[in-house]
Image (cartoon, rainbow, N blue to C red; front, side, top):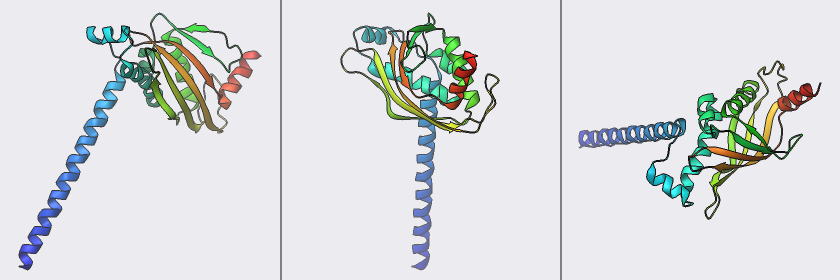
Length: 203
């Protein structure tokens, strides 16, 4: 009887181990699928394009903005650039020195992101509100984000000062029917590195 009980316990333990392995494999597969979806630029097919033109496809627009933030987190210039309209993206930085609208190419936006990331290589991107498309037929996607880290890297010839990165903001992204970001309206705070960069630009 003792032998039977021991065998039963071993069998139960083996089953639990197998279940844990299956859960781990499933979670890994899901993570890989999600990462792959964010890493590659999306081209809408004919049906999706029709839905987008009719004001639908909100999840598709949200995924574009999520892919942009994911590219920032992974420090992937290629992924960041792929999210923007090749014809240029119009940007209004409400809190900037000049809040007038300007147009930037995908490469310019990618370069600027990488300069910021070089200064803050340990940056973590987090959300108060993740990318969310507005109701109705709106093409605007909102995100209320914040970033944490340290000014620990040199960028634009500015030496690091080791101060904490603690910035936040709210950005509206206009995602067109080709699933590219064509306009951004940003309200945000600035990092110490950005402030120093602006000061040096004025000299």
